Amino acid sequence: MEGKRVRVKSGNRTYEGTVMPSPTGSLVLKLDSGYNIGFVEYDDVKIIGEDERLVKIEPPLERDPDKPTVSILSTGGTIASRVDYRTGAVTSQFTAEEIAMIVPEISEICNIEAREIFSILSENMKPEYWRTLAREIYREIKKGVSGVIVTHGTDTMHYTSSAISFMLSTPVPVVFVGAQRSSDRPSSDSASNLICSARVAVSDIGEVVVVMHGSTSDDYCLIHRAVKVRKNHTSRRDAFKTVNDFPVGKVLYPSGKIELRNLMFSRGERELRIRDSLEEKCVLIKFFPGLNPEILNFYHERGYRGFVIEGTGLGHVSSDWIETLNEICQDSLVTMTSQCLNGRVCDRVYDTGRDLLRAGVIEGEDMTPETALVKTMWLLGNYDLDQARDLMRVNLVGEIRDRTEWFEDAC
Image 1 (cartoon, rainbow, N blue to C red):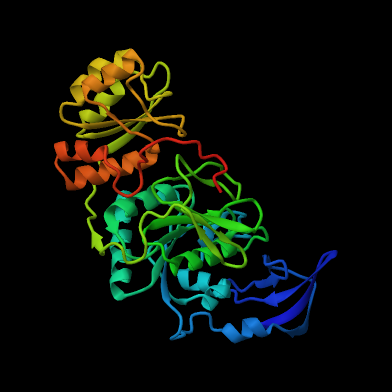
Image 2: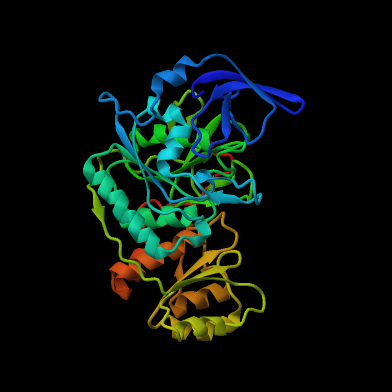
């Protein structure tokens, strides 16, 4: 019945929509509102017509020589998940090719080359997987695709997108996208996020970005710079926010119009290069009142030489940390960030901050703690310690702004 307009009766409710391809065997309808709804059981279904638009574009992976080609690389996560109705749990189920089938509107924008790199939830992502992903993205771009979409779980997407930003110089858009709600839920944001990400993947952007809902409605997605974005809510559809910067732009939905306001690199501006070495013995430590500085020695004695501290306010820890930091900084890269997220680290205001600077701690400027950690791993993997210290202060891919402003409701 794929492509047919049907009326489904389930319990006391009746639904009308178009039957979509379903890799799970359940009945999936695209409602006129744009939402998908899935039925494992239903009372009655009747065919009431044809959806010419859906029939026209099937199969969704058919190549059109007049359209650009985009690679979708799937790593798993909620956007590639569905509810297991046996257990009630959300599990990673859909391959990249199946994602493209479920959202056939993408085929109106571009040709799709889809494959699966990983099938994991994002809490299982590791630095070694970042390297694999960077190499796979590099391979796709070298083949000549117009852009790359990476589907990823939302919980650690900002770590992975930051890592790719440092490891890969890209002349085309590399777009990370996820979903807060699994693809087979009526309130899923996966379809609109994917459609907007496809628009960005064929745009004039030439950097790594994250595309996610900009509001709780289906009216637009925001384009976030990968090293400036953070997941700030556990479940809202607009959970992702740009921190200490303006978003790169927005994609209006469903029109697909792109509005850019903060582009750093344009399509074709940079040559394709990859430097994918990482030093994994780096750690992010969140300071809290009473935390013993022995935590630094614990990691240092185990060979860790990259430390990012999430300090208080302007970037502080208690004064009893200074002696230990004096020792650690002799052979390690130590960077101070802030628990406040918004604003800038400045250790020149109070005595403790000045002591930190004298010890050799580097101010993390306005970087998020997560980006500072990934940058530390990349710098120590590719440069000697002195070079890494110098480059930690340098804006490489948009992770540091020259001045701090107030960015609330920037879009």
